[in-house]
Each structure stands twice: as structure tokens, then as C-alpha cells.
Image 1 (cartoon, rainbow, N blue to C red):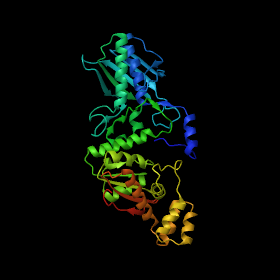
Image 2 (tube, rainbow, N blue to C red):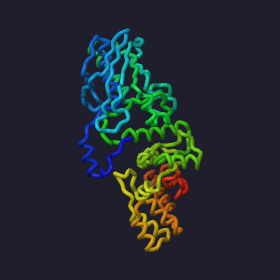
Image 3 (tube, rainbow, N blue to C red):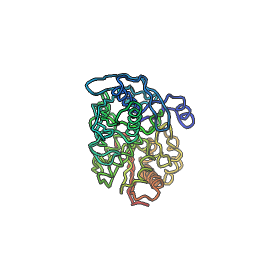
Image 4 (cartoon, rainbow, N blue to C red):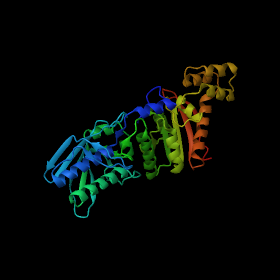
Length: 377
């Protein structure tokens, strides 16, 4: 979901990221809230700030925004600080309400308002469970055990997690498509949000593949945006759970499918972005790769363009202008780009049993190039 700022590329983008402030995942915030709430349930006092241990050993502290104790339960809330990452959940209030569970139950997770429930197989937690990923679950279980050992608790605890306005925020994520309904997921593998790392987007791509495989889909589409997605759906009648929100991360789709293959993949996207894939780039963002019009001119020559047309392609303002110049003179630059993009995809797949076809579109959704599947190479 996070992308580098316009104009940042290569080493400059790296330096920019290192200057940015890191933040905390929803899993870290939920762990802090759970720790504070369980401590209050056992002792009557909320630790504020509350310290937790992250998977890599860091021990940050979190200020509490909510403290409620009574009726045999305790609630603590932490406002998520995503640092300088443009995270949709930045500023969200993550709450944990804890109450005793039956003896021997251990830690039982419940989805409160704003936290989603898993409704489709293929995700890291079973259908019917709250959308709390394995690492945050482990963090909270470890925190509960630590608090129980310190204050004489049993460690048998119901932990109900909620996020204020989470259901509304989830509409800006891919949770509904993944079958996570009712709110957000509680995520994180390290507890730390690295600005512009794009980890959440890539994780969504992987979970999309998992859900499609679990549903028995034999054909998925990785699309760069909504226009190309509509073209793929119209071409093949694909259901929603066969659509992967690839965005700029072609490499993430291909590398995950290499390890977790689906029989057929359609790659659909704007001509300019797929010309980058054709040239061997796996990250299609404008800040990290550029349209190489010299490369396009070379492809145009392969397609029969003379010197004048090739020079015009090399001097074109945009990739789309280049394909239009060629189309007007009968040179199939769009098809040549699609074919080259398909070759790049097959190279990354490294013989995995995935048949690939590619569709290039213009901004209006008109198909300007195609490469048909020919089975795995």
C-alpha cells in the first residue's frame, strides 16, 4: 500500500526511507493493549506506558489512550502510530478487552467491533476465527504468559480485539476480497512498520494467491489497476477471489506463484507499466523503474519499423504515444511488449507449472497488445 514519494528512486529513495520515522504494527499495538488490560485485571492498575517485547527482541513502550476496569473485565486502548508510513490504520484506536476464560482454555481470541472475521479458506488462520495473524497471536500469548507469571494469573484469558472505525477503514484494504469481513486484520511479523516498505501490499498479494488456491481456482489474474482488472474479468469471467491486486508488484506475484503455482496466470496492465516488465523490471512503480523508449524503439524495429518510426518511438513523450505511433503504421508494438513481458514472467517462474498470458491496455481500457498462453515453459 505504501509507495515511495514521487521522484525518489534508487539510492535516493533508500536514503529517504532511512531518514523516516518507523512506526508500530496493529499487532504490536494490540499486544500492548492486551498487556496493559491483563495487568489491570490482575492488579487493579494499568501500566502507562506499557512495555512489550517484539519478535526481534526490541522493547518499546506505548502510551494508553483508554483505561476501563470493572465488571470482571478490563479494556486498554493504544492509538496506532505508523510513523512516516502512509498506512490506512495510522491514528486508529486499537482496543483489547480481557476477561477470564475457562480453566485450561489458554488465550482465546475474539473479534470485537472493527476487527474482521475470516470467511474463506487459504488464510493463515481458520475460517470463523478473528483475523489476527499468527505472529500477533504469538506476541499476545507470550505477553499474557509473562503477566500471568508476574502477578499470579492463570493465563486463561479471552482477548477481544477491536479497532474504532475499523469496518470503515477495511473498505480501503483488500480484506473484503480475501474474505475477511467486518473489519481490519491484526497484522505484523516484526511489530515495526518500515516506512514505504510495501510489506502490507505484498502480504495481500500472497494471501490472495492462497485464497484462490484454497477455492480451487485454476486461473488467476494479476492486474496493475482497476481498468486492467475490468478487462481481465470481461475477457475470462474470473470471480473476485481469482483477482490479485498486483499493482506495481509484478515480482511479488510471480515469485509467490513460483512456490505456490496456479495453472494459469493472466497479467493485465497499462502498456507503459507492462513495457517495464517486458524490459525485465519486476517493480513497476514510476519511482523505481522507468519506461525505456530506446528499448521500445528496438522492439518496434523487430516488428518492422524503419528508422524514422523507430526514432519517433524513441522520442515519444510516453509509452502509450509510442504504441499509438506504431499502430498507425501497422507495427504491432503492443503485441511485442506483451510477448516480452510474458517471457520475463516465465523467466521468473523458472519452469513452475503456470501458463501465462499478457494483456496490455490503454487508459480507456482498450486492448493494445496481447500474448497468448502457450503452457509452462
